Image (cartoon, rainbow, N blue to C red; front, side, top):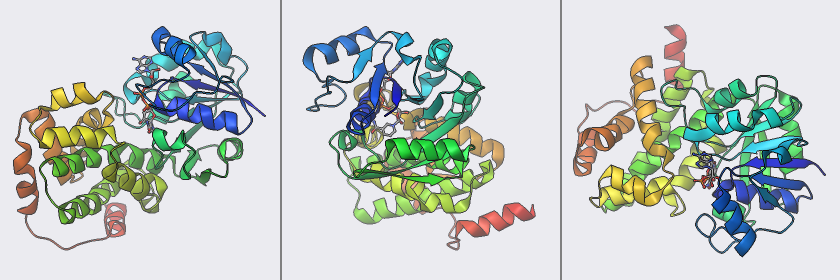
Length: 340
Ligand SMILES: NC(=O)c1ccc[n+]([C@@H]2O[C@H](COP(=O)([O-])OP(=O)(O)OC[C@H]3O[C@@H](n4cnc5c(N)ncnc54)[C@H](O)[C@@H]3O)[C@@H](O)[C@H]2O)c1
């Protein structure tokens, strides 16, 4: 049994809190927001984030950051835009021996840092682990069989997290490619938004399959240019997370895309849905790709829709009428950049 702390009483934080209690751990969930904590204490649920899911009484949900003091592991379940602020807020209460597990998907705006880099800067003496993969909170909370990966520059910490958090319905694979795992988990939100746009435009399964396949291709290209291993994108944090998010109504990115495809403005769609990390990630990824000289046609089209007012209806035709070319495996791209 371990003491496990979770930052953020949102969908994923609570789902993993339920899972950790089932695994026999002492769990505290810290939130900055008194209303979230009060709602959970009063109703035993947080219906706005995890409708119909009961939060076990053994979970200590609190706004008191001192409860994080004796945790062996702290999971960061905060949307990527707020990870740095939250980590800085609680850092004085967390021991240097605590393993910090980053759950957030995305890059820091402006610096383009991966979330484990941001977390690592906030906790420079701690070991940092990334946990990612196809894992909708709504399903993890209902104990639906789920597989994820954990990755770390410190193999022992990844193994410890694997041991503490694995169960018969939550299977964790260790992966040593931190960059690839984080890039896959972040960029799939862009393709999910685009897949939603496709659905909103009432296009067919052929189009969706094309988008997902060409999507993983451009995710891999950017990932390789950022230092990832090509094979990671064929795994749970790559194609696995892409499949779950492009096909499920649990995905807020896909739901925002559907609204945009049906004619809602991007800003209104994001306002209606709430946390839509693919929105900012599209801008970040577009800017990174421009800096690194990596071709990302889907990301570029979505960027134009989200930030430049281009009509969603024109995007597919723009993609379909690009100069025809050969289908190349991304390993060919890898050997190309290795030679450069
Ligand atoms: N929801 C999922 O299914 C899922 C699955 C895998 C990974 N993730 C990742 O986990 C992270 C959290 O996702 P989520 O769905 O739980 O998000 P969420 O929108 O439910 O928010 C999580 C919590 O973060 C806290 N928070 C939000 N804004 C804050 C702010 N400005 N300052 C301080 N605290 C703030 C709140 O307690 C909030 O409930 C995201 O990066 C997401 O990509 C989510």
